[in-house]
Length: 303
Image 1 (cartoon, helix red, strand yellow):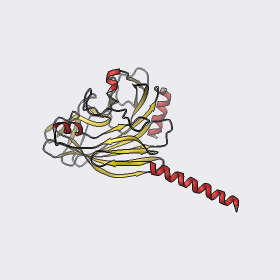
Image 2: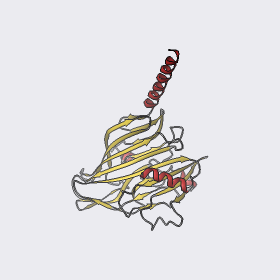
Image 3: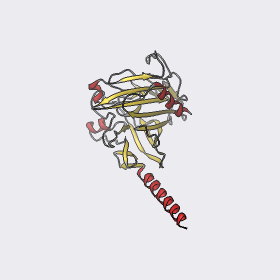
Image 4: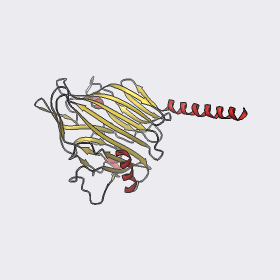
């Protein structure tokens, strides 16, 4: 009887701890501003989703949604927001500077004339292993028409003890009102990561590829690229992974000393059809892991 009581107490304690952990993982929304992703009660990422065109300044700050990644303190972004060198580079973001729609070309990279508008979180769920949320985004033309209706699923994994951040992105891009072409160049299009603007000053960016001798300006369909950069006394290593199901011919821009890098697919979407893009971002603290270890992480992702 005494032994059974101990087992029951231990089981109850385990359930209580698991419930506590579950309660500390999830999302916390500041309505109209941003959505925080929590891990053990601490913010690991912040999805910036405000859209305000009331003034020129507010429009500039809020013309596109993007994801900030937080440092270990849960408060300090290690990614870039508005301003600084190339103000339109922000955190983890997606865009093309030459989007063809109804006989016109729209620039939803520099965002000079139209916006990508956050319409809401359509679904979210969380447990001890991961937090997932689906955000709906409308890519607009200058006349108020929806060029692309996007559902962006972001899954933040809580089980990698060696990573500061590990997330999967599935971007489902539907063309509801007409055929859409997605064009541009590796410098101004694709799924991109931009570190803090401090990196544009300290010029600390260093890149690593899956094999020796890679020329990112010529070699296509790279499986992944790694970036290491410094912020103050800290170093961060980012592995950007390109899923094999993505459009072929994708090119990585991975050579700028300010650290903006990512994968650019030139492709198109027929009216009523959906293009799905998949990527994983894994960030660790400290120096860049060895290539063999990074390759192992890519294998985990694709399998």
